[in-house]
Length: 80
Image (cartoon, rainbow, N blue to C red; front, top):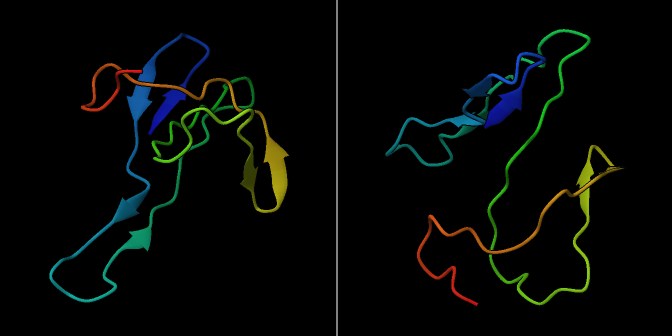
């Protein structure tokens, strides 16, 4: 999960830690939000949203802006 810092530095953070093969072994990991002047961007990858008129995202019941919803060339199946 990348975070955007004031210096435009990109830092990836894991959103979960898993200990397979134990059933239900994945747990949410805490995120570092950085300083008060930093901006946090979260990249989510999904399926079944192609052609949607709009995409909405909620965090803890609060609507957050979606900056982009579309194909990602780095992954298979991205062609339009």
